[in-house]
Length: 532
Image (cartoon, rainbow, N blue to C red; front, side):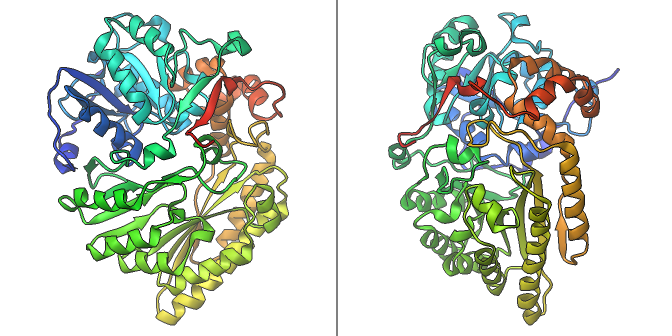
């Protein structure tokens, strides 16, 4: 059977680095994203690590992605780096950035293609040290504990120096893991056994960026490489803030990232000089972009300098005339809001006391400012949700559509509203972490009602919703190390339907029951950002 290698040359040729780093150094880190190039290079966190590694003297990075997508793992050749075509298995350490639990399987398939044993216990001293960072490492790393040697807990600025120093100074992988196990900011499964030791294991700390650090120069994450082959094509991304001022009961970012804090406007505006040489497009990203106290000033100055700007989703209360005017003036025509549900009562129960009337007021404001595309994010399967709440989503969409038509018709244009709907996955470290996922039959009835209702609304669309994927994601979000068998089989190609059936007793026990007593992931302490 002939395996197919992936040709990265067209990707590399399209890249425009903000700064040129040395191609060779004394030490080299494999930096891997367990998804496609398109997704991985859209990650500001991934690009931030790439930059930080190169800023350490005598270090370089080799980037790896899960491409070639669309080719069965059994037919795909070993993952090769973009920089030099080096094989993943030839490096001493490979650090994976993982933000989505669904990418666990991609990570394992990359190891398998590289000829690296999936289980860490089966690896020899000649195999790479496998490190995992990103939000999934700090939400609940236990499902991946049989596969990953070291989990980095927190901001790259705080954990990467200790990792690189250990790789520089220790002789072998055992010495590296022992050293990191004794330091804050790391979970090392060979040394920390929370499922066995329980309360006898001291809490492990996650090292988030503090408010003081964010005020310092050099701590602003921005794009390192601009490329057209990402979700944010040709954009220079700039992080605005961390955390969120809202307290939505489903959201890990609110409770796991520390209290809301922002980068100084002066640092953000100074970063524009770095972008100017390679692009005229900016993307401001954060959980709560519009809540930066200087957002209007930042957008206005970017416009004055000739940049085209866009933002990730804005909190509903943060939609203002000034923000909309600046975005529209730069050429943006799309805005994303997250009402989450269709009724005031359920929205208040989830910790988001925003009325439909306020939302619709903001929708009218958006279309009056000349925007033509509106994205609204919703969740289905919330605790206490009824069919009336689901019908409320359809009614809210219809009212938003009426507001759009009234404004757009006056200008002779046709707008569009897209609804992105997902099944609630109760996440660790949120107030709903003990809640069961809504039942499958209940969810299917709600999704059917939602599809039928939206289908009757011209110029309104609804994204796909998968109950099976939500069940799987809930399981691997909450499970312990005993999820390794199911993950391993998924990596070997077993279909999701078969997996859910074969492991049904184990999955249902984790997904569809209220969790009591101590929660297995509470061996980590969240929010060490100096404020939470």
